[in-house]
Length: 244
Image (cartoon, rainbow, N blue to C red):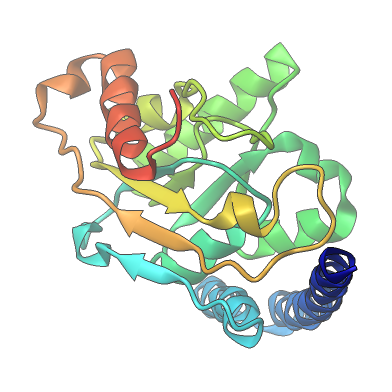
């Protein structure tokens, strides 16, 4: 009986926190939507969207542990991070410098409100399943890098419920080489436990985001984007402690 009561209490707590978490997300997302809709100036919109993303964690009582932001170069750079949860994008949007534009899977274009919010807050989109669309979007991303845009990628492309770091797609590393910009690896932990794939209710787990030392353009790894991708991947793998 005691075990049943404990299980019931745990499930009830999960549901109540989940409801609260979704309410917090709704109002923060609404604020961000209104901000990007009515506020002029791309820089202002970036800053307000980042503030809304941070507010989600703070109001939910799970303020992230952020380490190594001093490793982000003052100039332009390409950040690459592991992908474990729906929460990851909000984490990076809230705590990376606002100048970073996120490169997001093209399927988000089919969700009108999300697409509008992401596009107006500076995100860029890459088609994954159409060869022609993928090539077009890749050219656009490379052009942005060559123009000096700071970019943030989840090079795994998607995430799964089970722990583990997948292979990295090459786009971020091609863009970094073409733009002669440092690659900045980032390690995310805790978000898979907070809201994994296939689960509706978030759980109050404090996430952690650690920015690792950058790989600079004069590093020999920059001679080949495959070598560069694997070097960044191994740094992230060591930091997150998940299976390869």
